[in-house]
Structures are given as C-alpha cells and as structure tokens.
Length: 168
Image (cartoon, rainbow, N blue to C red; front, side, top):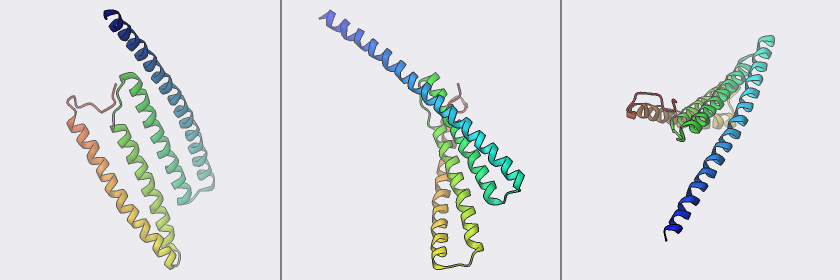
C-alpha cells in the first residue's frame, strides 16, 4: 500500500515538472513571437511616420500612425503580461484591462475620423444610417471604457501593497 502511494507521489511530481516546463516553453515561444511582431509593428509605424512627414499627410495618415502606435502599445503590454506570468506563475487581469482600454480607444479614434468624413459629404439616407450606427457604437465604447477604467481603479484600490498589478 505504501509503495502505491509513493509511486503516485513520484508520478505527480514528474508530471508537474513536465507540465511546468512545457508551460514555460510555450510562454517563451509566445514571447518571441510577440517580440517579433512588436518589432515589425515598430518598423511599420516608423515608415508611416516618415512617409507622412515626407508628404505632409492629412488626418488619414495621422490616424494610421496613431493606430499603429496604439497597436504596438497593446503588443508591448501583452508581452509584459507574458513575462510577468513566466516569472511569477500568476496571471493578473490588469494588463488585459489596459489592452482592452487601448483597443477601445483605437476604435473610438477610427470611428471619430470616419464620422468626420461622413459629415463633410452630402448627407444621404445611407450616410445618415452609418452616422447613427457610429454614434451608437461610440456610446457603447464610452460605457466600455468607463467600465474598464473603474475596474482598473478598483483593482489598484483593492491591492494591499499599493503596487501596480503585474510588477515583479
């Protein structure tokens, strides 16, 4: 009987060891892929910026640059989350709220630019419907952004050590 219990304990330790190292390997591969994607996004954003400077691009070019930079910021935040998760073995929710906040702000910027372009053209029934749908989406995004900001605030307030969640 004792031998069976010892065998089960040994098997549990071996499987825990294998799963832990598999998890770390997956996190490391994911981190490398995210880092590569972030580097490519940075190169793309730099090219967009130089192109806009060279041609003195309008609001469309500026929106593409800001959109690219916000996407890069999201990638870096996710990469930070992966790094902290590897070190601490815990997954925190605050970085995901921040990524969601950035993504929502990106969408608000896109909708705002599209709506301003719609307002400059003659108003048709189709354009009016598009504008109305955009305003509804902006309202939903505003509520979502407010909810995420309140959630981040409450997470900070609930922490005992007054440190940022995910800090090593």
